[in-house]
Image (cartoon, rainbow, N blue to C red; front, side):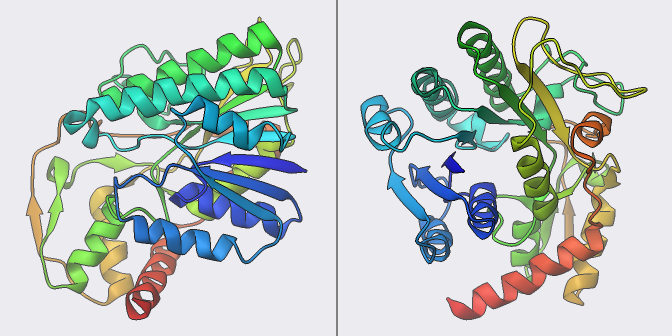
Length: 337
């Protein structure tokens, strides 16, 4: 197939593109190459993807509708995977304009283009943060998402609503996949695993927010990609919900649209995650315990039953295995710099 991926130079986009290329698909990647974190890391990812003749790339901001359409309309993708976004809960307190621009205007421009392209399936990257102030665990797709506690989460909720309206109006099959604390090799420098490993390597203390009491449904990157690839082959059909006992489908009653959690449903305490890092590195971290930051939520836990019913798969990679893979990658990456 021909697959268009936004955010192709990002952490998740890189891994997805590499998987798609390995499976023989033709991939057009797009990324704005913003300086939210080190652009050199993004360029390293791209250099690997460019080894394939089936990969092409355009450096274009989603806010540039004319530039976006000029690149993508001639490609005529079968599948569109929209990963590009301004990410990060904490950064949304510092630069809210970036979230409105990328996550709202950028997504609108993409939807306007998709309306013209009519691909077989549009997949939109949402987030566990969308569950916000919900206290019932685990989070299920049918739960209300009316209480976002960060602007980042609010823009992702808006993105889901926008994609639903376009799916209804223009019959573009759409899946919003909600990912939970994704980690692994080539991860973002602003995320906890990268920051912790970097600090420990350099003999610096790590900052542990929420006094270390937070729980997260950690998802290894290869598992997330596996879930996305399997969902690509399962475009929603209006009026045809999942027929599986005990599974509540999020399929819209008025559109070929659904949301799906991609996570294993096995939350782990933050300190257990830190312990896995210390084990993989063979070092004990000096820890500074800090209060919960504004916009964070104390616990995330996914109900993966809909994903399992749709695809026969749910994430299973253990944290010890996943963290060890990251540490091995980080050491090689540091040596190559």
